[in-house]
Length: 482
Image 1 (cartoon, rainbow, N blue to C red):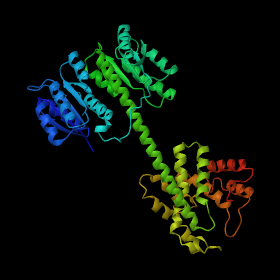
Image 2: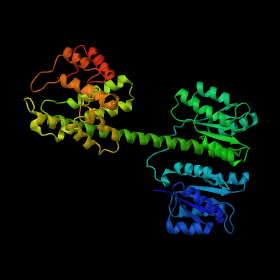
Image 3: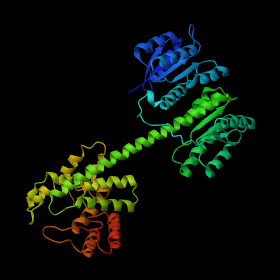
Image 4: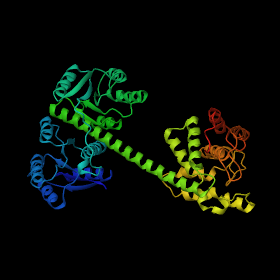
């Protein structure tokens, strides 16, 4: 669902401009021309996710409208709707009053598209209770002071910022250059936020931010440290450049104490909320994946139960395939994927008659041709799982051979997907090390010799070699059906 934003401005051009920018960014926009029209509108239509409210309007200005809006909410037991003021006036007293009233932001006109969208999204993300995020998340505050690093070549600015933020229970470190910041990040606790001056000698703020992101990668810092630029420059181009580089916000100098404090606090809270949301999404994804694996394991058990002589075969093949993949250098995610492919490699046997699968004597040519259909049947079943299209690789191609004499497609060498080449080795190993109706498990030495003999013809030599290493380490021959 698109976020709903109401814009209130007596200038039709401003309404059209802001409406066009936000609508193009998947937001639902309502444009109103006055404070009284806003108050009437919300009584009938309800509250939006955000109100953008111009300060200078005839009859009822933005500040008076804001006060009446809060009175209406209180009278009706409604939560406070986020409000950002709009103004073409760079008056510091107005900005101070905006934050003293409890508004969420102060956006300058004329609008710069990227800046407007960025600030609006920041406000919406800070207020999940009025938007469409999952309920129950709280800002991750532990009672510890927020760690703030301020970087500016002007010592007076550093002292002012430190005094303001320290008085508001923040732990402040001051540095005088970009190079000092990069050294500090490498050898100290990671800060919650960095305030970074743009105009500095040797390395300006933009260059410093680029180098900071590289340093974070080198140090393995998982989350980018939020950065707010400090500037006395009123240039919209500077703000656009900073936001493109990944800055969270801009704060004008000289500092207005209330504005500095609130912007820093809002940014820290927003980042905490974003990280909590990301952690929650990751948790839900893991829960979903775990459930999927359980379902797949149950399905694999059902496949194995169809064959009297291959109990646990799919699980063992999956485990051997994952171990080969791990030793080959697959990531944990890739290992989990190939494990699931291994579990389902024989799913096509569901479509093979039981009397053929469980026949205790030698199969006829016709019966063997029926068995050979199971890879295509398995691929047909798994191609319906659109969330994991690669899942069918093991089912379709685990009977292909490196020399091209396998089935169903007669692929050879690297034409066979890598995962299928791994599963083919694991599948053959388990087939030889398991009981069959006509024989006991083959000896480990014989199994080893068959794997070695098939290198380069039946098996990919790289994965066969890894399987041989696993066999040689299994001195008590535990890797087999017991």
